[in-house]
Length: 449
Image 1 (spheres, rainbow, N blue to C red):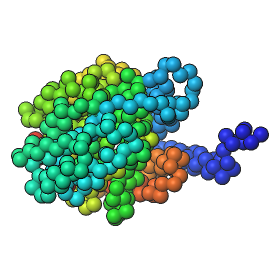
Image 2: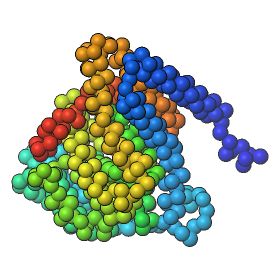
Image 3: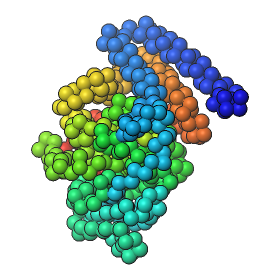
Image 4: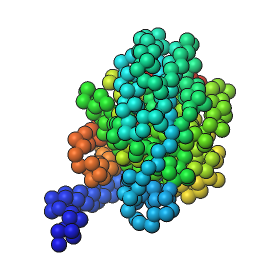
């Protein structure tokens, strides 16, 4: 009897889940009512009606896809051990899959963070003799170089490469990848690290030969600094555990995050020069390096996945100016690499391209135009100010559905209310940054924090 009841959900958990389901049902009803009333009241065109239905359906589909993430991930793990017939992927937990691993960390002017980033690599729950760390000092002008030299005397398997002139992150990554002795290469941002006792979970999926890249789950290290960092904490959790989890369900994560991802060396090494030499409108691509590298893994026919079992920490922008610069850089990287991916994704991933990739591109490109209509044109130029209220309600209700799933998978996460703040800022400000990114696309400066 005890063996049976141990697997039954507690009354508290059951009540909590029923409450979430009930709230989701209420939000769906309200969402339909708000959208319908807005269409009736403001004489929406067929194009606007179609856009509204399309966007809402697509956002809901991402939540549904994320719901199958755990099942999909377990299947991928078992795919690496065909000798195991059990449906319990946990049987792999103690299997001694321990390939040689190399951390590659390009850095510039990171005197405040680089020591911790490197030390956490050597604290990983992994055989010390199988860990190599390569750090590329990309023209630092602060004490970063001196700190690296100090660390090189402390850690035998630390390789430090000093460049007097800054060449850029992509060149630093390529240098580290080419020099790496490891079978698996872990790419880290210089202000990020993987929680040591979760490190094996980043390597574990590579036992499946079809896996080419793995993305860890990242949260802000400076999470409680201010409201902006707390809002980013909510966004990061949604971005990884919901949006990347949805992509991982298809085995096609389109951006293995630069702050904490791993690649199979024999897949990416042959395309290093092509990736390094990528250009757009006649100039070198200097942002979206990780998204671009992920594209190449997918192009070569391998799976890219996300794991919520490998945990990473990264430093996020603490000021609005830093944050906006980062967002513009990300949008440029997304735009250019989406164009690159569109050239092969239909051939390589026909199902994913139709149900996810191209709809995502369409939604992202249309959203700033529709937001302009809803926030500026209709209220102020056409005198229908109340339309803005309906538009904001629709956005917040969709955010509410995402938040309910957020609460379902992370009951102890206390930053969930900030997801509403993210939705509002994304609606009123961030969606319009795509216009600025397009207008300044030939500006290839990094735009660092």
